[in-house]
Length: 201
Image (spheres, rainbow, N blue to C red):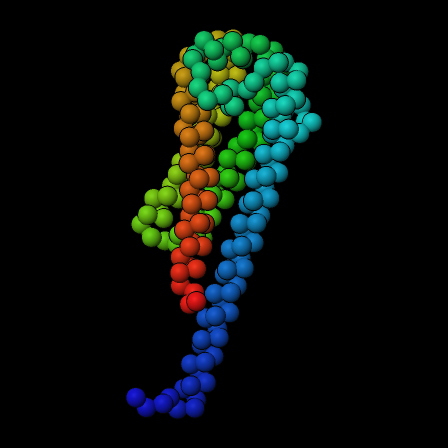
């Protein structure tokens, strides 16, 4: 094999440096995007769960003594109606605001979990399948919020189908969220183990 002419070798080196620089910038951009999503997810979670705002889970519970339907794993139509009734007018109004912020949280954590899985597993067929879990979870969370909004807006003549749909989507959300979190952890562990095996001792 003949060595490359000096000019071709220089072009080859320049192209390699260009590709390396582009890959580095892509990696930095990816880490920055994940960082932004992580901060947004944690911030919105704190706001809707334990913040002093009147629409947080803690504030509504302190004011009404009721847990929101969103934090219950499953409930019947009658149980859902009882909760909505005991919230009172102010509690139901605060719940509507909670749902708006929860929608932001759903979009953030869905994108974050999917991005973390992509970073750990790449674009294999299994990775693509795994990344659908947090996306479906986020969709279920948004659908739960939509059904609950209908239930709140129509109270006291709440359609039973709205409460039943909210409960069903809520179950999917809860299961999917923890499956997504576990998938992110397992993917990170697998990636670390694979990296260690590739490094010569």
